[in-house]
Image 1 (cartoon, one colour):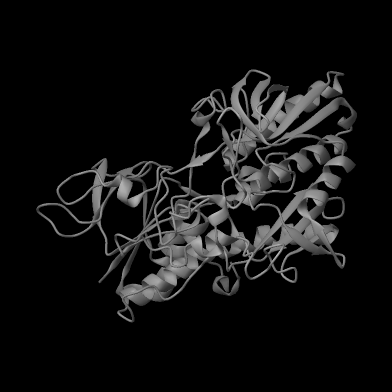
Image 2 (image 1 turned 90 degrees about the horizontal axis):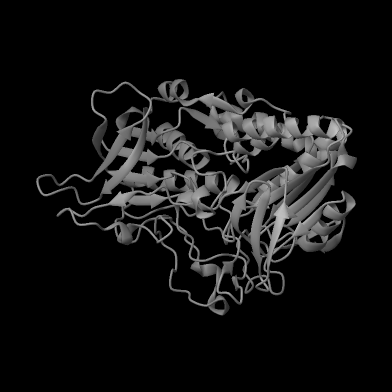
Length: 489
């Protein structure tokens, strides 16, 4: 009997573990190690952050689902990987620390035959002084990265609305809290939900709403921007985004690295090297992401963390990390099998894998500060990677092959995104975009880097209904309800 351990119970890890167990059955063991007790449909955190949903509507407990599936669930934090075992034992093992279950031992060593890293990111609030104040999140800024964060953001938002109803003008600052952030899309969706919520509350005229982002232009989204087919025409995400902001009276600061946050003030540096301060009464600034801090050790006990992980803490996979300057970048730099090049029974999926480089062109200020969005790897791409790696590992466990059999390359993968504004079935709206491929391939698609037949954009009520459908569909799928395997990633 082989043992597969999946580190992480989010979108990528949950997808990996459930598909692997479905295909392996009782003949082999699947273990999920995650410190989280609940699964969270993260896209709907935006609605929690404006009071349109409760926390309970976007999360559910993992334990009953894994028990039903026959998955060994350990509510624990992965601490260190020992891919060569140790001097007195050949078996590779993972050291874990329990966080929420009654166990006699605080730590445990779990041997494995295959290990998949799907931990997701560390929310690195500490990279920007004052951003969330580390463990004291909310002293200066709020977040929508978790369901708890979003519920807290809603409380702060409601307090601001009450102040506006009493005649006190409020300043809202939404965007990214560091020059190397990702997830511009989440902040993009949140600012439009803020604007819609204030309008519905009758206080929009008492609010100044401003966007701040590390993008060099509106609509970059960490993907270098895109051109898409919309209404029979090719439109750029820059023009599309600028029109949306202008129509709603939203100001913007772009190419910004937020370097310090104080009470009511966000200090930033711009690409031209100048500095500024954005004042706010309410600020939701996405933190940068980092690896969760896993360590790795060789058989003799020596530290080999740098062998398995990039400096940012994400796991190295079959990517070209020696591409060098922007001019040398190519779609072929991106990983396909997501297998670690040193230890063939290790894989990383979703945010946990180290990308070879950004997708957007990196830019540096005259002061030497790099400002560039890091590549988005959340949602649909994470799930697709998780399923592909699960299929490969299952084939390897069953002895069908010694090499990965399935691929999930972001330069050959499409993705869909729906950004809402409001939640009402007949009063909300949404922008829906499909992108193919996620990483542009300028050799295959000269000029724009993407297939315009597969890269489209629409805005309206129909897209808003899609957002509602996806919420219920993917929670159904994650709960392993009847027909869950038929629902696409």
